[in-house]
Length: 234
Image (cartoon, rainbow, N blue to C red; front, side, top):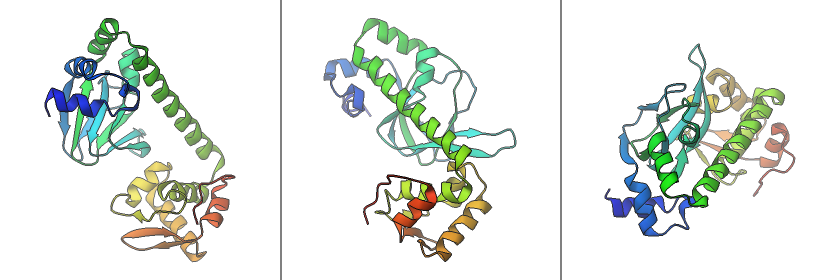
């Protein structure tokens, strides 16, 4: 992808949308394109700063990995969005591990290059945009802590199904969301989420096949998930 096309794509990132093409070219030139094959570790938690990335195509799992190898997915991100922006701000180690789920194209800018760019181009929209991203990630982590502290596995499973199906309006593709990823998303093991799915199926709340999961009763599922104001479309 040349600088002109990449500049236009970068302009789709929410907090770059007000910048003109000339400014976007300046930002693009300060970083580099990086491609990753599916299954590749983009960077590892606690390694030195890998810098900030913008995901242009593919999907990436941002996850924490325990000492015994258990994976917890913090977020599944899709284009076009920033990630690992914290290390571009403080230069510290990577706060999580990033894994390419599909073949991915990314744009990356290192800590030193980012700070040189900000010093040469002190547009407040860049800083404010990063703060919005950090705020969103912080809210996500707070919600995850709440789930782990107060919701049992069955409730966490029900909440995850509602999130993935957008309140029951979408069918969940099991190719895109295998048991391993579902369990990692709610910090449990595949066997536990399989039992939860079986229980929900027996109650008539979901239909589960090898290919997909369909929400049959989103309101009842919301009660199990302990959600007061769910996004319910049925």
